[in-house]
Image (cartoon, rainbow, N blue to C red; front, top):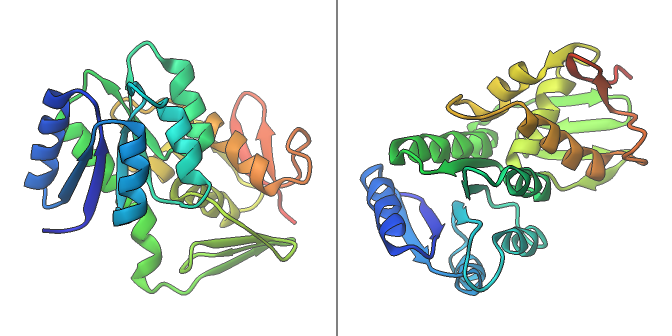
Length: 228
């Protein structure tokens, strides 16, 4: 077996389907049926990634993300109902890396899991790259970023977003270009997901998130990283 995926899903048929497809793809899979079991399982097993249903019976899935993010940057792919757009955005803003909408294709979910893991494991490839823009330093191999010497904790997706833009400071990226850079698969990813990730990054790196200094909006087009 390969890396461990924690699947948090209270509907047994869906949990079993997801487990079967992930195991067939070479992953070891643990299943939790509620939020408390998910948090306990994450602490105990330190999974490579969490697949998290937001509609849990005991503890709201968004609350589970909040709790995980207090002590871990484990990649998270959320499962949401088709009509829960606001929950999707909140989940991304809380630090989830991607989402899949129910009803979903199990093959799509496996592709999303692999794409997120590729992003989070890119640092292990031994590439030596340090990006410096003004007082922002991006250490690509270690997936670390600091602003004015202060370390900032980003998720894998947030880090990839910052690194992509910081490599070309001043360049304007469209939301579509950033989606290609940070998600790796298209499927049903939509451009508002980038806005959610940007909002979350700004909370972490900007002195005043409402008046960004580093990650700048280009109205009607997308975003750019300040060039110095």
